[in-house]
Length: 243
Image (cartoon, rainbow, N blue to C red; front, side, top):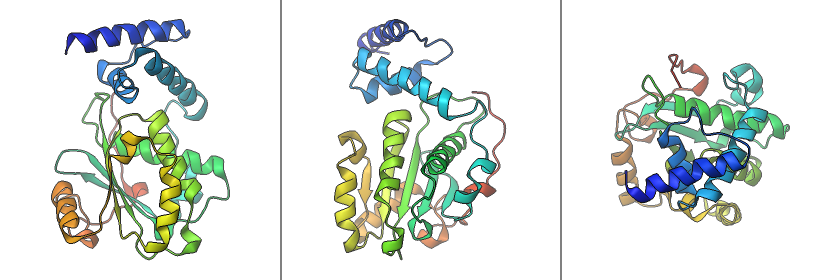
């Protein structure tokens, strides 16, 4: 680790203590995610870290949000967890044509957390390192106006930005119809530059080839040109991990 990074980590720990909290029990990779997300500014990273601690304490039980708390959202059967990409990152797929704006915003937020936590956990091998990332695919094929949910998109991305810093490796958007462009431009107003840089809208054969190559046939479902079977997230059983 570079001397400048070590110095920033030391300052981050001190800044967190000044905010009446502690970094005890958190490994360096976890703390580095917050620093990177705030351009290595220790004070800004410390505020983000403490806000995250408070949010987790108020929003998420110690053992995570169980299926039973988000049963209604799971019943739409729109989220798939596909194993690891060629680079070893868990792949999560959302088929938006099966999504409808949530009637209960609180349950939807819990659902977002449930999906992100389970996806990240599926990429942990034994013990969490702290810098595990995920790859997301948003499939917009066959969507209608009934599926449009800018607020839902914004909630998902804002949770990633605020509470899962540097967890997103890449997000691919497939089959974007023309009528969705206006909605997407609105959503982008809420996305940080770093988040937008990780989003790839697949629009031509060359981008599709790169998408398939980067994901790999073992994780990519047959419907998208791979060899895997689509697996609903609720059907994926995870081994117990040490975090």
